[in-house]
Length: 362
Image 1: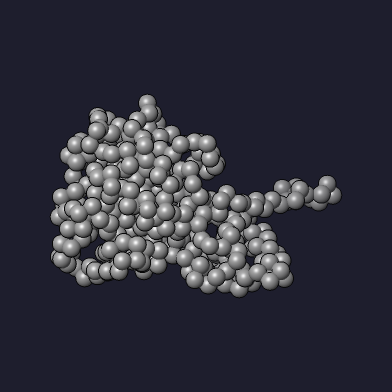
Image 2: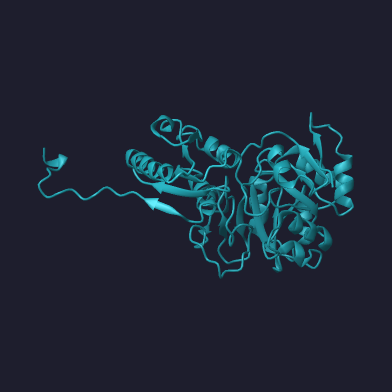
């Protein structure tokens, strides 16, 4: 199969070929505001199976159904919680996915065998046009090989999917760079299953009620059946081993440089994910800045691209600073933790010796 690319020069670029493919039960990669999606008809079991095959994705990992109108959610849900309507008014179109009970129209192939369905309305003109022009609801996980960094540019999609899918709609670089927030509305208290650009605080402000965080967000629980994409499996991972280092900035720099020296002495090619402020402090083979530490939107937008660039450089091990930023730091660290397989080095200062004077006594 030859993979064709259609460059979206404007919002009126002809996408009839893409719409025809979706109606025929075929696959199309397309841009959203979060990452590129790999789309197919959400209500066709055979189309959903093609997504899993192209990605090499486990079949119990649910897909997200993309819609262009709230009525389309009502058409596939067994019931629509009142919270869904409130949230849709506030955040749709946008990077928020809700999980609701499904009805019989949605095949289990789309939901990973679950009796619930994950739904979102993307905030990207090309994605909304594809849904409307195809006349189909579109199931779409990220358009990468399973486990690899999500694609934020069409070139990333082509790298993973060349010859595996018929068409890519190239809309340029995405705006956010992290997948949508996933909120489970099937529980008594809404629960975030995947953090994203829409934060817990934003959801609570709109709902005027508590929103819980799934306890498995940071920890790994291999026995748990995933209710949302990315909960169970290692995700977003580069080819190299990725290790996170947490602590005070100066201590992190010293620790990473010491680790880099050991790896280089062992003949390993090393990489470091730094910030603009610390980039010049490292001595690895390749050091990449993810952006200024105070610009968390840039950190999110650049993360997957950097991981893919390290793949192209064929490094053996990558060390990364942690990014506990105030707004979407949880989402950034969730992706990094998944990519690192939860490998974290916590750098702690040694306790003061008794004969050391405390600054407060001076």
